[in-house]
Image (spheres, rainbow, N blue to C red):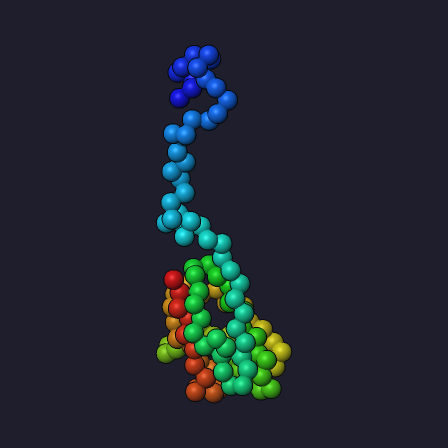
Length: 115
Ligand SMILES: [Cu+2]
């Protein structure tokens, strides 16, 4: 812009027509930093039981109940946590949306909704 002109006409204010087009809404969406989400297992429930996650998010399941539980993919048991004793945690980075349950207490169900 200014470079093509002479020094005389080039004043200190930046021309308004330098447009940084790089930051579109879509780019910002993609660049959102990954988050760590905590899921509590308490009272025979996953809380929250529907986990809204983005790709790259880390999920930490903590057993705050008085009995042991696990976190197991439904229906095929494609992945599973080890047995979590009360007070123990398990870290998981989902790669797709999946249903989950506790295979010891099959009524305990949850869902990871991966965006
Ligand atoms: Cu259980």
